[in-house]
Image (cartoon, rainbow, N blue to C red; front, side, top):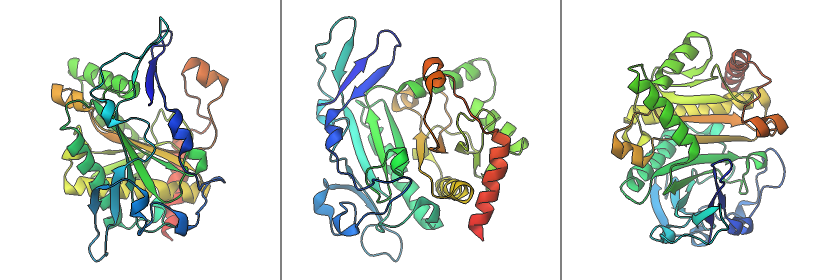
Length: 336
């Protein structure tokens, strides 16, 4: 069983999940290796190798599922411990509690060799539809406080299976990053100012840092990008959750994800990358707090060094304006 352990010095929480070390691996070389589909548990015909399907969506004209969701076979958190209110024995001044929540896998395609950068518009929209449906379902569980959807692409980004997939983790505690973001949105609202993300999008579009912009969603190299070629993707309409996004916004968000992946590939080649979706925590939605949902996507070009770890200050060696120009060029090259 996993455990959440609190650090009384830094104030943060760590999820200790030793059982995750036993999960299967078929990715062994950076940045991307396509393994043998015959042994892949995510390929069609191998559904018996995974837990039961929780959601299956199909593209028009495609036989069988196109996107499939199921519980992670090696979960970092478990739903059966959501009712467990006991405190785990921990030496004072430490605290610990069971690692409770929901951990799901979202297999994005039937095709083992696919890449996010190559998804057709309808396919990308269907993946986002699966995200939205799972968020809408899980927020009805009052035991859950927040969910994070994330994608690890390539071994440098933490992928252990090469078949394209995302993951969703819903927790009974709001993660620290989301707590900080809620604080920023709430502080602006209390002061009577506009949404901080709406303002940032306006500034980045005006500053020429947009990489993708279809008038519905944007992908920008933000003025304060924490890492090289880091992009933020968000709808222009200020709304709190992807679960309530319009069909056009969901399709546009999918197109923006694909464009960001293509821009990276066109600029840097086959490089590992991470992406994550920050949706308003369920508990904040219930409380009516302000939020503007968004995603971040960034390549894994190196790891944090001593200064970053010791200070908590990000150090970016690529100017975000130059990164935006390079990424736009990479996206153009991909379109040829």
